[in-house]
Length: 124
View 1: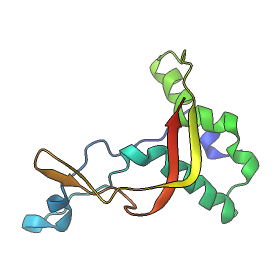
View 2 (view 1 turned 60 degrees about the vertical axis):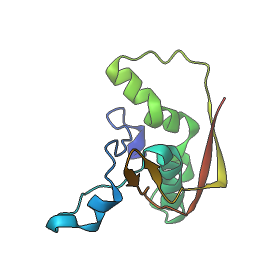
View 3 (view 1 turned 90 degrees about the vertical axis):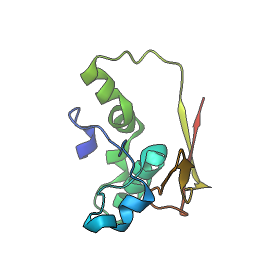
């Protein structure tokens, strides 16, 4: 059984991104972590694909039911959040490129795997 089928595990992203200046070791310190939040779902799906290719897990261990639990169901149940929604996530292979950076209010944040092709996410 895949570890992601455990109701105790949910994905997480770095929700406190650091400015590019903090990532370059200014004043002898470098901010840890990578910014993944806008691309969390595509990165998780890509990681599963790589694990299957490397035979770390099998395709059967990454069923739609397991993914639904891991990517949202387990967390909603743990935190007591209703899952009454009609929205569906549709992922399309390799149709998006991760932005080089995000700029705003005097900061620039560089996302993990910038410039690489990834899954696109559409909400329906």
